[in-house]
Image (cartoon, rainbow, N blue to C red):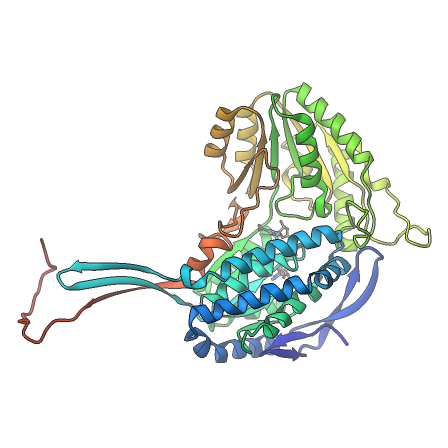
Length: 500
Ligand code: NAD
């Protein structure tokens, strides 16, 4: 049976096309996933539209309680969810658990819905007049998510959308469908009424249907920049509210006064965790001064030599494979390109051979951690998002030069600075043109009660994902002005705005 959809609280088939889902650690296909056609997506929107009136009128506290139940179910089934993630994405199990935990934190935040939706109230805005703003749901909203966080990124979206009173159609990545689908089923078990959360597996056809159906009022997207830009312009052209988070190329700057050993350890996890397939990964280190660069490279080489690469299901491994064979070819191509462009290849991940349990060379999509020195801004390995375990060192003479380089880059998702100099850190965090900044923190992913988003071509739209911005994104403001005149009050017509 191919992996199906989840529509109106039950499993649903639909769409004549399907595609294989691979285990990246073996290169073998485990199963097929259905790709929804337009009619199937329309039926998911129908279900969401039918569920909307009753769900909109359900008290926020009751909606929030379902999130509390779901949190308990996710914790109870965490091991199974992580196995599903690892079997299709490839990341090591402990990293899958980390992503699930981050997703659960978004559910915890969503469970504060009654507090988050309290609105704003002004008594006596005028004589005997009260005024307040309330935040009402939009209706049916949609989410389209990438392969690299099959549990977490959908949980950035739909829990906040539904506690705000919307109903939802989710289109997860067709490369990693199982954990996302399983979580949607758990949401039903937790008490989410049929039709409030619908999930359609699919590709471009499903996405275009969501973008063009006028019943879909808003779209949240996370994925690569070319697709994000397309979603943003198409969705806005259809008068939808859109937030589209795109790709990244995050720089870590290391000053000469930094704790080099600590910086090296932090950079190892940020560059090679999840095989570099994180939008907050660090693929570039900007070393201020040649001594800093030399010390970093020595430390990185040493730690890279000790890394264990292999199947994500073996928790002794530090890093699993890339997600697909195509992506493996692409990352390998970037390493070839870096050599051609004149960067110095210090550690070459292309030569890695992983053996499977029977001692044979694995057919999985493994590539070893790779390190380049003397990377320069004109190179493609500097400009483009590789999304693999490839770290480049750029040598500069000053913090000013490092900051100018970061500001000139097309992406502005995350960045970080390693230093012991508080003045430099304050200047950096105040002025750098990037949305999320770490000071001696390599992966400054905001916690669930702040919001997540980059600047420049890393985000199209105005509001960031999850946290307080999600309340604004998934609601529209209504402002009510009210008076209750007594019957004895004289009623004169007035033709001017009140003054004084
Ligand atoms: P992707 O853009 O290929 O796919 C994302 C989603 O869009 C998937 O659901 C896919 O089915 C759909 N899609 C793909 N091509 C489409 C098209 N032409 N038209 C309509 N829909 C299409 O991204 P991916 O490879 O799954 O994920 C990796 C990318 O996501 C990286 O660029 C990474 O930086 C980015 N990402 C960004 C963030 C962030 O918060 N900024 C977080 C995670 C991942």
